[in-house]
Length: 460
Image 1 (cartoon, rainbow, N blue to C red):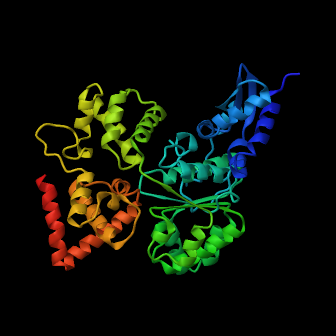
Image 2: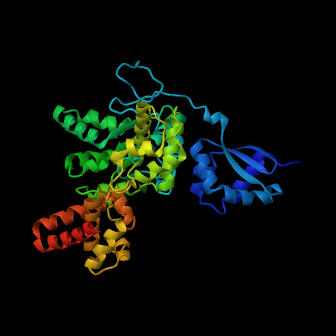
Image 3: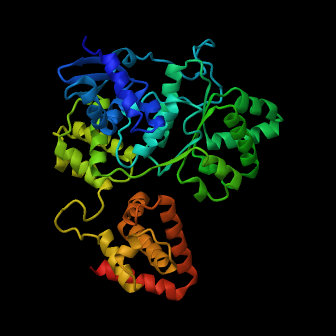
């Protein structure tokens, strides 16, 4: 009797337990279901496109190898979105002022609305965000159990809030009675102050500690230096954590680099998973632009060479990339012209730094490599040393100076500079630029050395 798809998949998963961690199988493979087995293919249904892409890229090769002895012939394991699970109900997650009182999802009046576009299906995975994406998906699959708390950090516009809200969408779709509280840290701070003034702290504490199953807080770095608010946040965190409620936090820097944050909060923020989102590389940026075009069902098709042109020149964040698509199409509509590189150059002139567009007559700026070479030579170190992870003083000072000059002369984005110096976080770049600026203001000799390096770079 031939082996059924269901039985084959069960045996393959049994074998997979010997080669993959248990949490990987629980998060990515157990939520799947075998659909069909025929013509050398085992088709497996996954809950959404995000899970399909992840399993295809990370597990399909291994599973196909395990499938051959189980099925008795070479068999490819192929993932598809499960049809039944793809038809998800559209739901209103939060109460608007004019909405009727009775909704399917109990909510808190202080919450901000979720963006319906911020789902896993619309999130584009690349090397810079795959760890954060995987952790977010795992937290959505097992809220309160896997990666709790989940702390996602990175520069503005790279997708932290997108992943946070994607978790909420999944949890709410699978468990409609989940009580979700999504707030910005600034809102939390303001509510603490207001509750103290109005003497309603018991109500505040009930709303944040007793009536919440999924707690989402954006921009927790704003808690820095707010001692009273940190006290309330500490006890709120403890109450939810001890109740196995999922906590998801975002910040522009890792917990240890948030100045003025109490050590006990730093410790708790690091209890679960701390994942960063970096600057997308060129291919990732192109994929983001294509996804934007597909997602918005744009009437005008943007040629691949134009998408590449945009991706090559706009490197700071996802939000700016997507804005460029909108601006270009509006510009094409107003000018009644076909979308082309020439039109993109004209429409996005404010995004292209001098010397980058290849136009004749423009004086090219020095490259980041040139900045590193000049500073390294003048301070008696090597460019490789500036790009290394080493933190010895002989390298730290010239590295900070090179970051300062890259920011001042090249007008590079913070995340770009960080990537050029060994993948450092943008908050490190901010600290370096500030430190050099302060040192120049009080040390004349130091200022003159930096100015001489600047003059050499400008003369090239």
